[in-house]
Amino acid sequence: MRFRCFVLFCCGFILLATSTQAMANPVTEQLRDASTLEKVIKNGKLRIGFSTFVPWAMKDKTGAFIGYEIDVATRLAHDMGVRPEFIPTKWSGIIPSLLTGKFDIIIGGMGITPKRNLKVNFTIPYEYSGMSMIANKKLAAGFNSLEDFNKPSVTLSARTGATPVQAAKRFMPRATLRFFDDEAQALQEVLIGKAHAMIASAPFPAHQAIRHENKLFLPLGETTFTKEPIGFAIKKGDPDFLNFLNNWIIITSAEGWLQARHDYWFKTLDWEQRIK
Amino acid sequence: MYRPPSPRRPSLLDLIILLILISGAGWLYYQATTNMDYTWDWSVIPQYLFRYDAHQERWVPNLLILGLMTTIRLSVWSTILATIIGIFMGCLRISKHRVRRWLGGAYVSLSRNLPPLVLVFIFYFFVGEQIMPFLGIEQCVDNCAPATKSILEWLFGPTSQLASFLTAVITLGIYEGAYITEIVRSGIDSVDQGQWEAGNALGFDWWSSMRFIILPQAVRIVLPPLAGQFISTIKDSAIVSVISIQELTFQGMELMAATYLTFEVWITITLMYFGLTFGCSLLARKLELALRRREQG
Image 1 (cartoon, rainbow over the protein chains, first blue to last red):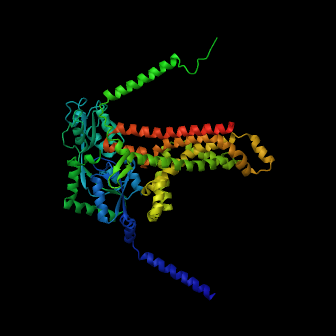
Image 2 (image 1 turned 90 degrees about the vertical axis):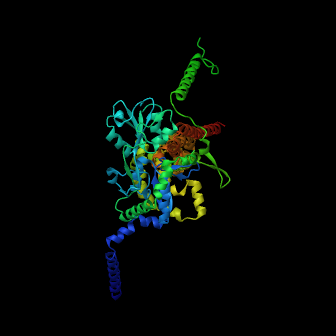
Image 3 (image 1 turned 60 degrees about the horizontal axis):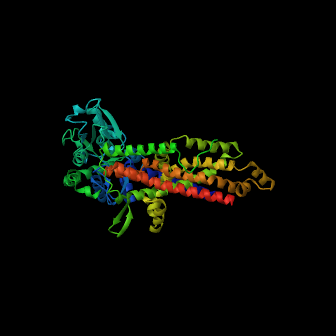
């Protein structure tokens, strides 16, 4: 009997001890421990979701990933003291993949839009991108303004995804739109004359105008008709990780490092022989 | 008097059909080369198959061949899983218990009447997320010895993608398993009812009859359609490119996005798939003939 009392007392004591322990662990600490930041440090790797998108991210001849985005992600992982693990993902499923934990962060040239922001959290912009157009010389001869393309008889092609779609609907609502899974297919439509022009983020149109100068031209010149902030996307409810990333962007921006990498990938074509 | 045409000499109709086909192909080729406005560049394609690695001083497989390897691994594992599921469910389908029959039937009608793409998404986003972390595969792989790692790499491809790869294998296995279930069921059904009765008369119970009398006969009937199903699995494996499994189709699409060589890459991939499936078809044909010879001889 006495022994039983003793056991009961012990059990009660243990229960009491653990419950006070839990009470001494406020919400902030739980939040800190649940952060992706903690998980990344613990696993020693940062898993990055992205999609092939010249010159943001692509595979070179040896099958290694190269590009502006890859440089950014590699340095970010290095500054966190972990190794980067690149997970190439189809663009159409990239947000669901992040939300279901296939990777920790999207660094994939993703434009910050209110609609996407309802599902994921964005960092401050580390880059600005803009939409531009590349047109077929025969079909779109003499076109040089957005108004010229804003007709039902004009067909525009673009890669599936939010930003080109929004740009087209805002500036050329009357044109016929066709969407493709990747940029090569959308460009092919313009090359074979099935579409008048393609809408894409700079610098793609300028690069293509150089490559196919006898068939394609830049109807709007080098200017972009939209300006989109590009950020990293992470899961909601993770203030620590967001704070770390935002400050990382501020630091690398202040160093001028981001700009230098941007100029190499966007303003030169020195990297082209690494691909083909 | 009617004489059937001799099988060796082609008739006039054959020649006409052949001419139509050849001229059609010629017209397509002409269209492709003149009106397409496409700059062909085949010279860069071979390096995506194999490349010379200066560090290791030897030739190593590159993107497309690696993709093909993943496709083969995926097909083999999915077929093995589908066969296990198929045998189990096939036995349920012919069971005497109504509930078991119903279970097997429900499985077959569910997986056969859903588009495989839908199944893939359901598994990848819902099931994959629940089951894989529960099994803790990623942590296991990270902590295992280098020797185990290399064995795993050889069996399943890059270990970093193991969890996604297994999700894909399970999805394909369940989808193809429904077809194999039906193959197994029809194979067992095609064995004469008298064989069961003979087994009973000799005092065999259900399991022994199955093992010693029915299955050996059913296997012979089932092998050719099974080989055909394996070829189907290879073709269906392209579906999992949508969940970013790095098999041949996915690698090809990534390559197109990077190089814009749409047609060269698609044609190369088509030939690679065809080589793989046609090779398997020839093997299946050989197997069938060998079985027939054994039966007759």
